Image (tube, rainbow, N blue to C red):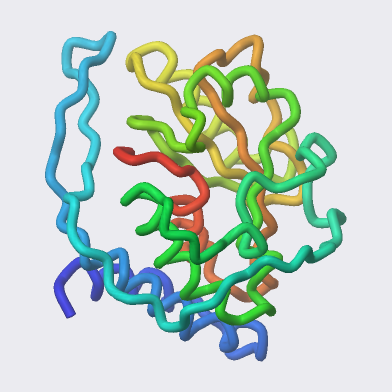
Length: 239
């Protein structure tokens, strides 16, 4: 394994519990870590409102490895919305049920499908592979995402907050505010909490796209969500 893969595995398994749910998810998450580790990052300085500019990492165009299984997920799965904020849309943007084996896909979509299938091979993971757009940010999504559901360049963050005044809620709000002040690029925040992150309002932050996804079972390292945020954001070049 290369240094990038070793670093990912160490971070993801640091606080992993021995619960049955956690151990069931572990093999697929490690496979996904190895898959993402195959990409070599190169720095790309992007134009910004600040004099320093914004430094984002760009994944090189390399041939993706074959997925562990070749399946067509065409079934419709009904899942509980109890673990999602009330502002999440009723239908997911992405999910295992939307994966197909159609050959008419861009190279970006093919790479996404190859990575997602590592987790979707086990139906127990399907609830954790759905991502929902916040219903208040439909216009922002339309402004920055293309018809193919991809955005060229953006900042990407993942977070979870317990409510107003929560440390991570305040930190996320300050981050989004800083991006709007000092960068010309949009920011995608993937919320893995059961409640919405306070103070992230579309009127205040016109270049924010807020997404929601289910959190992992208790005892699972929150760092696993970093890989899911990479997949869910559908950003070609991000940091």
